[in-house]
Length: 81
Length: 81
Figure 1 (cartoon, rainbow over the protein chains, first blue to last red):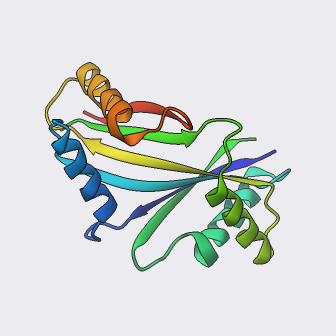
Figure 2: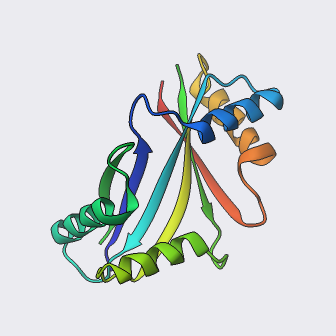
């Protein structure tokens, strides 16, 4: 069982309304917060595969479905072999 | 600048419709995927604070706003001092 973690975050300069609204809500609760970035992570179990081909396959998933190259950057990491 | 990363994931046994639908969509695209878990991450910049008090403060944020203790578990980690 190979589990690959994909971390999809917004590129620098792209507005992050979810993060900004979270920051505002935390401020209303009395916390002193400078900035919040929201990030999406998927743990993907690709079955029995070697690490290198699992990473390649998950990068392909990012290109085809998970990430929008206009606004997102992503990183892929094998979590468990 | 202390940035703390909070990772909020569903507890074991709680349905993850976002992950399951992502898995189905990947399958329709021809990928062989056993399971997908969706996880939410926030990078929170709490300004100039020492690590220990930053972690305590962010745990408090999880309790008050970010996580739902019925369905979520969370982990907090200092990312950058």
